[in-house]
Structures are given as structure tokens and as C-alpha cells.
Amino acid sequence: MGGFKFEQCGNIEGLYLVELQVFSDERGYNLEAYHAGSFREAGLDMVFVQDNLSMSAKGTLRGMHFQKNYQQGKLVCVVSGEVFDAVVDIREGSRTYGQWFGTVLSAEKKNMLYVPEGFAHGFLVLSDTAVFSYKLSDYYHPEDESGIPWNDKTVGIRWPIPKDMTILTSERDSRHPAFGEESALKPKKNRNTMEATVHANVMAETSRGRI
Ligand SMILES: Cc1cn([C@H]2C[C@H](O)[C@@H](COP(=O)(O)OP(=O)(O)O[C@H]3O[C@@H](C)C(=O)[C@@H](O)[C@H]3O)O2)c(=O)[nH]c1=O
Image 1 (spheres, helix red, strand yellow):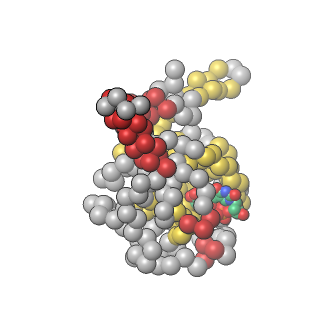
Image 2 (cartoon, rainbow, N blue to C red; image 1 turned 90 degrees about the vertical axis):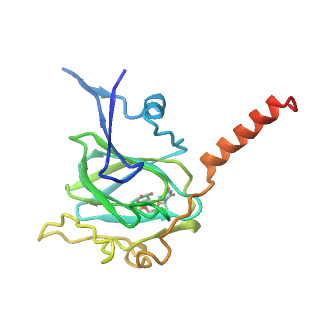
């Protein structure tokens, strides 16, 4: 069974760097990229309902994205290449509201970032191309999406942009409202917690003998 190492990122509650155990032999390697039980044991209990893969060219900057009502927690990693991955805590009332965290994720390091609901997320591609893989705790709702400019002055993410790099963003990513305009997320009863509530209610009804 593969082991996982979870390390909290600075003082940001709920945000973890994840290290995986790699089993190498003459054929190559195998690893467990996700194991619900091990994550749950470490207190990381998001339920993932969607997996995405994206491929991007060097200099691509995707972000900083979030969904307002259908907040998405994410488990992100790179399966080919290298990126600088960044998140901003936009949880209303959080001790670290407005604080950003960034780290290099790469296929070589095989590291991951566990991002709870309530964060804006984005990444910059440092290698020629990068394939980015992520699990999501809620479904994609395009009408519910918002963002923060990747270069928002108030947030001040220090992207490691080499002098000769041209930044490539989508049209949408070049016109997000400034930090604070839309980016304070109230703790939401989203799909995961709603499922948990329904389950708890059913259990309560059962124990009262009503089911
Ligand atoms: C994210 C997403 C996109 N799409 C489609 C819609 C659109 O036509 C096309 C490209 O979408 P976008 O430009 O939004 O893709 P992208 O910029 O890669 O969006 C992603 O960025 C990173 C930083 C994140 O954190 C993700 O949660 C997600 O927001 O893919 C889906 O069908 N499902 C999805 O879950």
C-alpha cells in the first residue's frame, strides 16, 4: 500500500502539500495517486466527483479561478512537465483571507496540492508543455465561475516569470474583477456537505424508528 505525506502549507488551514510513495523497478514505476481512506485518516475528507486533464504550452497562465456557489475543492498535480501552482485563500472570515501560496509541481517530483473549497486557483507553465491533472469536489458550472486577475496588485502573487517568457492567457482570464469585488466566499452547503446532511438526517430518522 502506498504511503502519503501531508504537509500543511504555512499557516493556511486546510491547504496541504502531498508527497506520494513511488515504487520503482526495472520496468518503471507505479504509485497510488489517490486513496480515499488514507486522505480521510489525515482529516482530508473531500469527496471528488470530477477529474480533469489539461495540456498547455510554456508561458500559459490559467487562473485565478473559483466557483461561487458550487465551490470546488481540488487535488492537483502535473503528469508531464512543470508548473508554478498558486492559490489564494478567499474564505470569508479566514485568518489567512487574501493570503496566497505558490509552489512548483512537476511530473518529476510527483507532488500534489490539496486545495480545500474557498480558494482561487491557477498555474503558470514553466516547461515546454505541461499536462495538468486535477480532481474536483463539485461539478463544473460555467455560469457560476468567477476569478481574480493573476496579476492582482493587492494579492501580489510572485510568479517566477523568466525574462524571455511571454504570458499566454485566455480572454476571460484577462478581465476578472479585482480581488475583493467578488472574491469572498461564504462557507457553502454544497454537494458534499448536502450529501452528508441528508445522510445525517436519514440516520436520525432511522434511530427514531421513523424509517
Ligand atoms: C474547467 C472545465 C472546462 N470545460 C471546457 C469549457 C471551455 O470550453 C474549455 C476551456 O475552459 P477554461 O478556459 O475555463 O479552462 P481552464 O482555464 O483550464 O480552467 C481551469 O483552470 C484551472 C486553473 C482551474 O483551477 C480549474 O478549476 C479550471 O477553472 O473547457 C469543461 O467542459 N469542463 C470543465 O470542468
